[in-house]
Length: 64
Image (cartoon, rainbow, N blue to C red; front, side, top):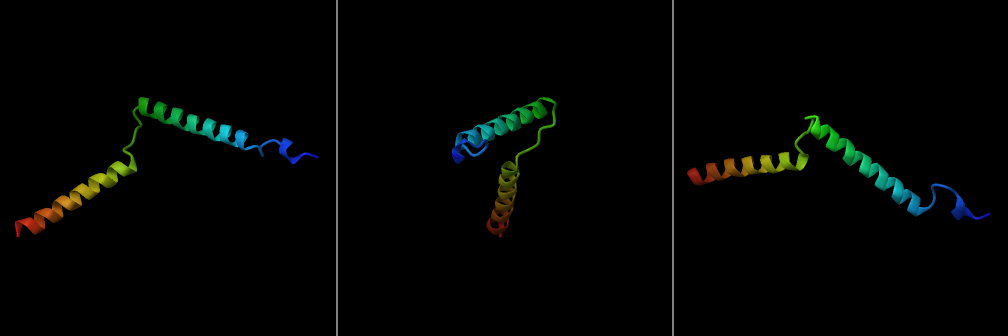
């Protein structure tokens, strides 16, 4: 018996499945965005929060 012939155990098959899942995820996101259901990515919200906090802190320390 050769264990490498079993389906789903080959790294090439797993990689192909990962690529297919990634493509489907991207395709679904593009379709949502075209329908107007897009959201702001989390990293953008984090950057905006940091800019607001740094701006507020610089105002407090430089104004005094």
